[in-house]
Length: 142
Image (cartoon, rainbow, N blue to C red; front, side):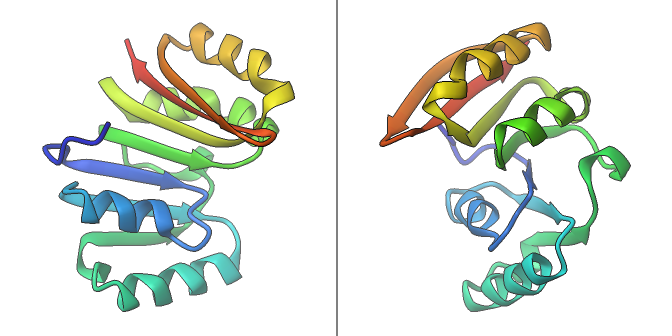
């Protein structure tokens, strides 16, 4: 779903930074990776260096609620359902109209709740994939 013409990606809850790395490798021009955990920040920094993408990713220790940057073409969040739902207003404010949202880390049994919240915040569900008890959601901001 990433075409390579997207300018800005936000990796919310970056962890190891894999989603930022993938976005850059798929052609996104610039990424911002945020996390609140010190170990995650250290790990992501190391993996950005190893994958030679450190010059295209801005790494910040921050929660999305306190994070000021906006106008993202893509937002990725591989975080548990409760964090996604609790921060969905902030995600919605930071993504461009027609921006792409990729959500994972949601249990299959929690899908309806997440889908309802996404709809409330004007996201159109494009695709849902599942593996074992987990789902991934691709949605567009309307």
